[in-house]
Image (cartoon, rainbow, N blue to C red):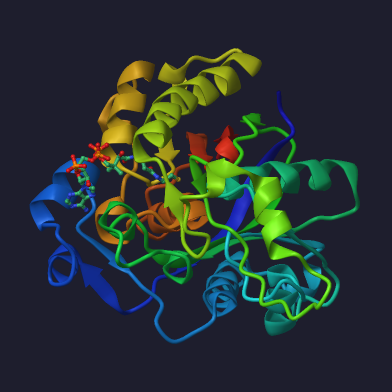
Amino acid sequence: MAKGIKFLGTGSYVPDFIVTNDMFAEFLETSDEWISTRTGIKSRPINTDKPNYYMGVQAAKKAIEQSEISPLDIGLIIVTTVNPDFYFPSMSCLIQHNIGADNAMAIDVNAACTGFIYGVDMARRYLYTDDIDYVLVVSSEMLSNQVNYADRSTAVLFGDGAAATIIARDENKLYSSFLGAKGEDGTLLSCRVKYVNTSPYKNEEAIEEFLGDKFKDINPDFIHMNGREVYKFAVDALPNSVSKACEKVGISPDDIDVLIPHQANLRIIEKAVSNLKIPMEKVFVNLEKHGNTSSASIPTCLDEMNRKGLLKENQKLCFVGFGGGFTYGAVIVEL
Ligand SMILES: CC(C)(COP(=O)(O)OP(=O)(O)OC[C@H]1O[C@@H](n2cnc3c(N)ncnc32)[C@H](O)[C@@H]1OP(=O)(O)O)[C@@H](O)C(=O)NCCC(=O)NCCS
């Protein structure tokens, strides 16, 4: 299938404050050895003093600068995040305001850690069905807002950051995607909305009763995760998504030049690529220094590759991810 896309520019923002595994060991019963061997993560940047959208704005500005387009040329802004600063205005409107993209339509997408993949696929569909020529996709994530730093089984996994790209049409390039979701109800991976509600009419107890016993022992204030179930889902969803995206355009996983998986855990990535029989040399990994930055993880890798000169004409890139909801998906892009 032709009707591909091109990345005109990329950008990312990584907070300066870095939390190492040893820093966690100062206040949690954990160790660098445990975290490194189970996850591959050594340190993660944490945003301590700015709202989430600030990171997205910085990443977007860099992507626009590299694209050599005007912010006014952007027809659509898609922001992917699991932790917006406001219920409204949306993150995309806040970023739009800060970059001066006055001619754009602006929407937020929450597909959890699969957000960037959903965002890219939506961008392409708009590019081919509308009069939009340039789409800005920004993934901006501040998991430190949602992590319980007293819970060693989740705290060590996540980092903060943002990454962006400007996407345009490229009629003659290959493109494929395979996206989906399992409709997980939040008992395996979730973070509930915190309402500060003063309504005299609201019956909190009735709402909790409606949600049922399954949420009784889940702390509504923080990320909740059943690590083993997420692991099982991920090692199946990743190879399956890549295989299905390949099948749709008659190529095999062997034909992929570079695989950029969601950077959740090195063990998950290694298991998934061994199922696909893709050698690790073709897989880009930077989670050692970033941790899991949810939907920002894949575009952060893309920007790192781009700025290191590792992206080459005609390469077949594959992004693949999984996340809360249990969303999953893969996108194949010929450069
Ligand atoms: C989280 C994960 C690394 C845990 O690894 P695991 O080998 O499954 O470990 P378990 O959950 O079975 O826990 C084993 C033990 O380690 C302990 N443990 C958990 N986190 C720990 C930490 N940071 N330091 C030390 N011990 C820890 C557990 O409490 C448990 O102790 P217990 O046996 O006394 O109860 C792994 O399940 C995983 O990667 N899951 C996927 C998570 C993910 O990707 N989430 C993001 C989705 S986008």
